Length: 324
Image 1 (cartoon, rainbow, N blue to C red):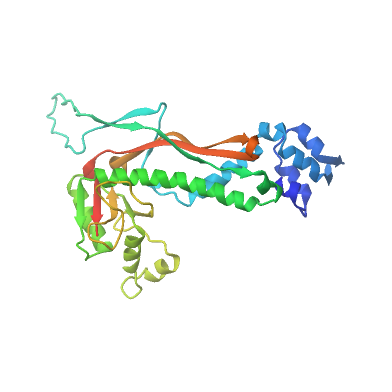
Image 2 (image 1 turned 180 degrees about the horizontal axis):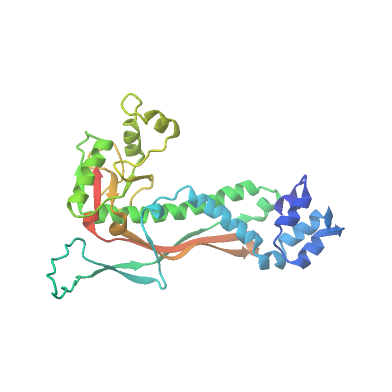
């Protein structure tokens, strides 16, 4: 629609199939003849973009939302690792049951013993995170829609970065295990050693989250001279499962006061390993949302983009830090 209003589309008849505005708006926009679009009036499109018809149909808001989510998708990490719980209020308690137990022998005809668990609780308190994107009248009048799109993608990425940072901090501070590489035996060797710690505590790790530095060290272990899959991995840059773990990479900075997410310096945490079903949980009160606001005195249109969420560690021994 913006292309119609401010550009010169080569095939305007295609717009008919994509327009989701009201029938009245379409009648103003198109001249029909035998069921086909014969002409398009750019001035009418410009009016439609600013009319209540577009606000009612949500066309602009829907496209802004799609652009924001596209920016967020490039940064997705923790969503793919941990389970997510829908929060019906801003506060929710998550029960944590017994981590490891054995079923007893039951004699023939005997009564089964009751299994009692000593529950503790992790509290999730959703906070609101977001930004406002001021879009000036000059940007619209000068048809600089690519710049607007870039800024919208940035705010989507910023929200996803915050979610990643929040969970990363919870994992670093809440881990009950740590493997120290002492600057040597890095890469896959470090992964194997950390896995042992989690399994000895009765959990089954399934996911590995790495800094870019640790990712590079692991990737270096796939040199073709030593690994039959090395050539394929080096060409694609996609690491397959590592000793049964799904690999993930995030380059966000942590918000921990005790640990530093990084590589190449003694004491830095280069990665962590989890049993994702037992290690932590994301609480989503509201996922990424968009609302339009106008500031007529400053000649601005301001999409406000926000989300409400929280994260928590659950079982400490289901998490293992990997120290450089």
